[in-house]
Image 1 (cartoon, rainbow, N blue to C red):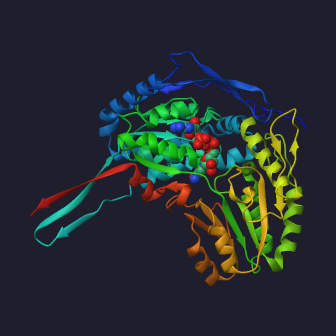
Image 2: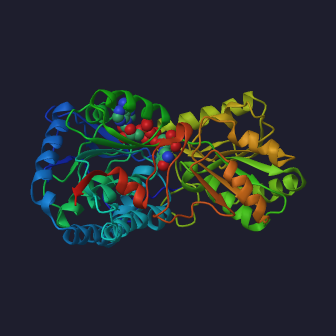
Length: 487
Ligand code: NAD
């Protein structure tokens, strides 16, 4: 395989912090190297922020809350948000290339999903923020009660590496729409697009200090979550990190929003449209190398169609081209990092030890070039297998047959996770009945990853805390004051 790396002729960037409207380096001078997982080449350096940098960023954010931003009319703030979305689209080729260099995902995916949806997040909330109202109640001739919406204050936005700009803007857009100021910390593994976004915000008219960015590892995130002048934390990442953040935030009682891990089931009944089911199941299994929190990694298939499903699903999976993320024919790029690649490979070993049958894949590829793993379909594992129970977050799925609705429902819900599920059936009554019993925040019927940004997004059980999207995001990023006016 030939890895072109920078086919879009976009130069990778060094990543500095962005505090009070300026790019700055760390006081300590400490940096780490950013690695392209598709080539193992060094992309550049990233600053390591500590308590000092976080403190400066929080102070800048607090000051900006009281300045021009705090009193800016809604219409003007909405125009700025719209402009951020426009500038992201103007710079789409550059941002998509940077996202692909950082993550190893195919360039076409960065363009069509990551960056396009990042722009859409701003366009959506630019409109949404002008359309929401507040509660009011008339209590006979005694009083009128009405609520006033205010920003929460300084919000920490802490993000993962799998959809870096998309997930960051999913938080930043509503946070700004509600009038907050922010300190962002992107994943240390994928720092580049967030670094460009900070400048885009300034270019769009966001006043200095409103959007701050501090790079670094978990310790940098911890400096944000324990900072006494940060009012809320919106976090997306692993369940175990969410738990750590909850403890760190407890002494200062911060408002928390968590989007955490998942082990999502796809349930395929015998009456499903098999062609469409297989096409979408390929996506929900292997898109973005399986590194999407919503990917369906436990596939349950009703016994009468089990063999046919497996044969057709496996033959399509074998056709998927793995390789150079800048090649337009590539379907599966590189895993995001050496560490994550090793984690996924360890699950392939576990599957072998547990007696799994590798119907497709199970191998690493192009080891000298980068971190590539074949799309992998495993059968023959039981419900207690670690590969069936634990989040692998790679291009690895297990397929298990079932005989009844009751039996499969029990397996579907037999997990600490509760993020999403997809159900495939042409029986509407069953679709409604079954979906309602699934313990997950989001259920798709005869589709997957279809989003309307007004709908509640989030997980139950160990998959999250609260919901994002439309009114749910605005609720999180605002505080309500009820005013009672005696008549
Ligand atoms: P992670 O939890 O390792 O890291 C996420 C972010 O938290 C990074 O920026 C990291 O530096 C920071 N962090 C680490 N330790 C911290 C600490 N103690 N205090 C504060 N911040 C800290 O997650 P990841 O490996 O980057 O992302 C993959 C995980 O994210 C998967 O579990 C996936 O399911 C989940 N995810 C969930 C959703 C969702 O919407 N539910 C979306 C995408 C990813």
